[in-house]
Image 1: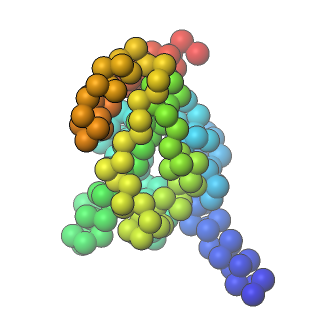
Image 2 (image 1 turned 135 degrees about the horizontal axis):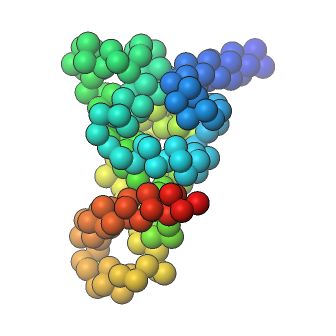
Length: 179
């Protein structure tokens, strides 16, 4: 049994090393099988929250590396099922890194997803985390618009928080520049 556990740990380490290779090179930081969203530096987070081709490619790199689908540059060569899976995980991770930025600003409450190792979010996305792809953290009670948020119909609160994203991302970028 111990050999099986050791084999699984080694498999996780190698998958993380493969997946994070481009990030290690790009950000000059180290990432491993236990790296969660909370562990990312503000600088790395600032790059990932941008959206667009550059941050998408960085997310493709880690996702495709962990899933053994090759380099992110090969994303457009994937068969449609694999491409759809990578796209779903990319959109999920993009949401989560943006919510993590909002958490660091004190705008939203923490979410258990922020503490899950990124490789686990990717490897177990379809079985565990796909149900969270539409989850939006609660607005933090210290946010200036919290009272307005509480008055909104509960089902519309995620939309309320998501509408704050552009301002939050700009605030995070500005805060990080000043650090």
